[in-house]
Length: 301
Image 1 (cartoon, one colour):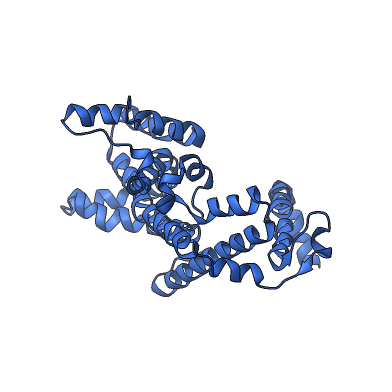
Image 2 (cartoon, one colour):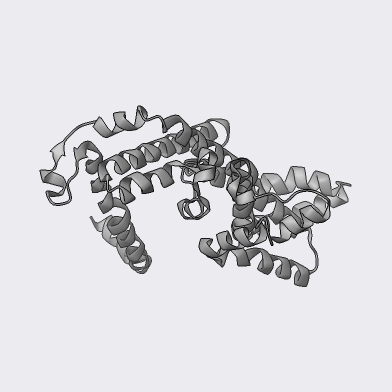
């Protein structure tokens, strides 16, 4: 007890700073987890959670037997893989390129320009997509017609949805996500580069043997976190881009939960699907962390 009191006195001000964050997670993250009981009940808003009839795994079976199950899971997983494969390396590449820029004015300008899209709301971003990709007066289609080809209705064609979504996500968030890698790059000892140059190492060799190993821990941690959110496709942007003509590729678990759980007021069914998605995400992050711990000295825990 004396040891605990001594540690508390030494770090009490830090603990006071931490308390608002702790209260936030308790109130808005852990307390709402009580609501997963709805997925095991035939929830009635007038009866409440406790008085609603218990139905066990009924809604999970309904979802697994639904004709939309494989389409929804496939669309969500494929879009998540695209985001990891193409979206995850983008900020790393941008950070490495910025690290090679020697003029601070140019570096700050590029950083500022790349950060700005992160602060644009998804509503505005999707509106810009519709404006630029319009088949009648969109800039992209004007260029396509100028080259002698027919205009393409990008936003109404299912085969273009994933490409448009991933590219817009990269443009919107690449600059903001670069901050972490730039911080990791700044922690690398400059004397390592000086010694490498004295030994005749080219920039390529410095990149492979100093820069990338120096930020490897940050890359692995962020990769694990990205894998843990692979099925958490940005609901708002997908919903804004969604229309019946692209359901075959654009309809994902989150939009399906919105339609069946919120709009149709089938709260138990929507909660079951959402809990299923969370369990899959948890499996991904646990597996990725286990593999990282077994193959390297970096892991979340």
